[in-house]
Image 1 (tube, rainbow, N blue to C red):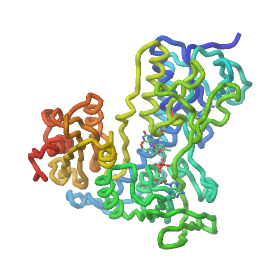
Image 2: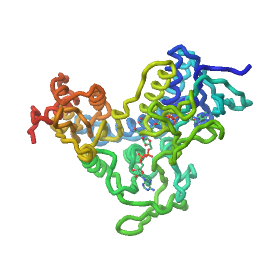
Image 3: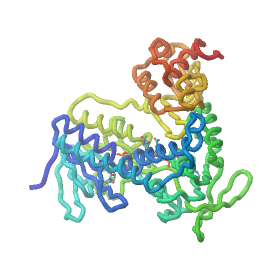
Image 4: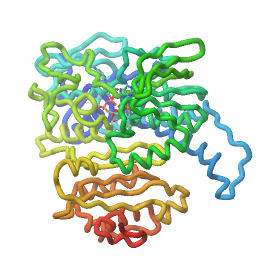
Length: 475
Ligand code: FAD
Ligand code: NAI
């Protein structure tokens, strides 16, 4: 007799593994199938996020930031170290160890929650059946009450610069480099380009980034983008805007990159070229032709607001469906779907999904940018507060940047919060919570913030929206 579960999840990234655990917490029998294989040939749960994305990139950002600060900041604190050097192998060992601990932890969580973790390929068949092919095993068909597709995404490959996994590489290769390239090229000044460009630049690479758009960080608020552009330039990142790569050819010792901008055609040479121009939903071999799953014109699985596909009892979550490609977005969709399957009322508030770039300074936002609010026609006010006037930021020696709040003129509701500066990725949580509760700037103004703390900049920005900032001149 074939195995059967209330819920079968295909994909154990942050969308899938969280959905499986939540389903099991509801008392449903759950299995989670995943085929991820690391570069050492070992299978691991956790998907892109834990193995090749969020976690390893943040580990490297921390190591490289400490190295940079030891070189450039310690003296100001009165600390002498002599020559500071970086052991790339040791840095990569730490990164790999963090990944191993966290991915191994998912196996533990599965056991504790009685989720069956199945290592191998999953394929949705017609009639809510799933074909499971274990690694080195024969396919078997599993019966499922409900199926959740959480197959994630993969890097977009450019026809003019196909990956060779040596010199023309994707973000995963760029995370696992075993030496600092003297010259690093990056195509795309998006989240990956800026984070990984920062890592290798801090470690000594000369980094050139080619970005097709004319506006730097086009998805961010303009005031934030302005501060970030200045800081990245100071750090030595050479970001060429309005530039389109026209070709890349591997040559002896490196890669020759051709690009065009308003001034004409240019060529430069690098040792490694990272292509980071976005990711696409990964659905190869995920479902049979007669399974009833529909893809949109960009290749995402078509779902409604509650992540239901067109097939009753089949859902899809995370990077393989519309919306921002963020781990926390996928996880919240996983929770919502498991709750819906268990018969509960559940939803994801897509209006308050925070975005964070873990660069230095960090960049984080939630809600609308000023341009988006202006475009909506709603009357609004703004408040902002610079970290240069914040005591904790001064003590941390990280005074670049600011907090900006946009609120409705009529009822004072907070519409967007944008932060560039120290710990922006942590500070944004207060704004997310405030917006989740439809808070006003007055709510933030009347909330006590510890002193001295970076969060006081959020408090002061809220005060500034009503020209009541206490530690800064109101404009
Ligand atoms: P994934 O994490 O991609 O997981 C999908 C899993 O499904 C994979 O293990 C895959 O092998 C498996 N799979 C697919 N098809 C099948 C099949 N048919 N059978 C079996 N298994 C299958 N997001 C953030 O929020 N914060 C960050 O700081 C951040 N940093 C990032 C840094 C980098 C370099 C990259 C590349 C991404 C980063 N992201 C970050 C994005 C984040 O990694 C993704 O949004 C997130 O992993 C998506 O989760 P998911 O569960 O949808 O898919
Ligand atoms: P992205 O969408 O953030 O940026 C891609 C950039 O490449 C854009 O600025 C785009 O204009 C540019 N581009 C596209 N085609 C180009 C071309 N031919 N030439 C030059 N520039 C070109 O995508 P990225 O950086 O690859 O990241 C993929 C996803 O991973 C993101 O959507 C993000 O959600 C997620 N991610 C999230 C992180 C975080 O939350 N901190 C960190 C890293 C990735």
